[in-house]
Image (tube, rainbow, N blue to C red; front, side, top):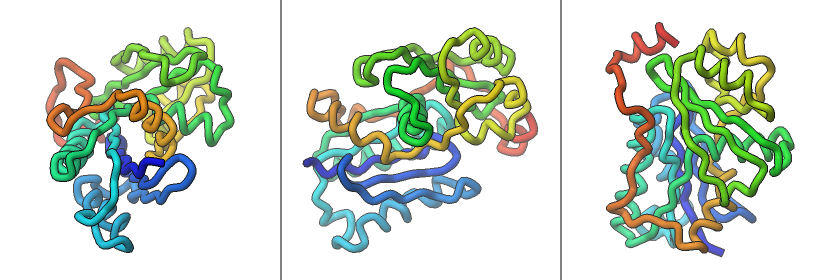
Length: 231
């Protein structure tokens, strides 16, 4: 079985997983801390018992390309790109929507053939969402939508299936208008089976192809305090 490092920093808390679907080590950061400060320490902690990252026996890397925090997505992509280049390894991209869906299937026992709409927040008072049908995840290529709270509420109200929302949206005013969604916190380790399928199928990237998912064509630049005030 391949030994894979999966990195997710696209949402508020970082999670990293090392191993395979049948056995892995998981590290998760404090949601209140900065991913940019914690990530390298978390990476180091995964390899401290095996001689460090330089001596690590890895077969591939994977990362959450987003959407969510574009800065967070850039951080994950940068770390994976650097390791992939230094070690000559392939990289596999997953996204926040897939991680939320996989978490719901694992934690809330959502059946694999259940239509789901997954939602993550942007950092400028907007939301990203994606609708999945009842087919296996590896066969789906759904489109991403982005809009304001009212757009999200309308789309969620019209969707017939399970609504899965990033846990941090609970603190947003829009949460009151979403009914009773499944509040989930993405976890890198949920992606092992999907990553292994993509690795086997050759759906990989070189280090030079690793990049974050840019979810919006136009983003208004706000300070962190301004973002939180509008959330």
